[in-house]
Image (cartoon, rainbow, N blue to C red; front, side):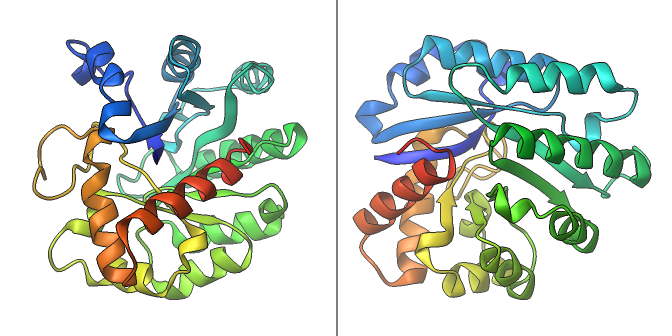
Length: 255
């Protein structure tokens, strides 16, 4: 079945039909979802959702855009969550220079702290990197994060950078953006990346694929990503589903 490696169902956009959506996942071919935290509240929500639904797992972490004002107590809290049942990763964490805030040194400090927690606890990492390709890669190399493993969520960089992550054993998270017209960079990456290094994601409620671009995303729409990846790789859709599901379970230590 299709495995959604990154979603945000605690978002208020799902307040009116969250349970109904989850109850429809199996009949729509979705067998697993990782709910990704972005701060303390959403990480707690992720853990709560994972306790309610057998096919939902949690990732806990502080998103780079949420690092202003946090302190060591947040890191102690995060370390404590890592041992909880069904917490499968530290994330989403990383660097985001798009808005210019928080300051880069602040983002780097807490990114590194969370990478250290992942290494200490043995959990893989879910990496967010936007307009920060060089710094993200340098930190991951400097701290030997490849030993822990993880996924580059919503991969958006060039094939040259993709190959460096693949060579370190990372997975690339491919979502709705791959279906957007004229997205030649990501199309090139997907064509060149071995299927064994690809996992599927939605980032729900964001980044819905065509034909739902601009609307609320959900895991049911993963079938459109499957179709596009299968087309680009020249393989049957079922092969994409089977291989990426196995990859997701390896990534999150569920096998």
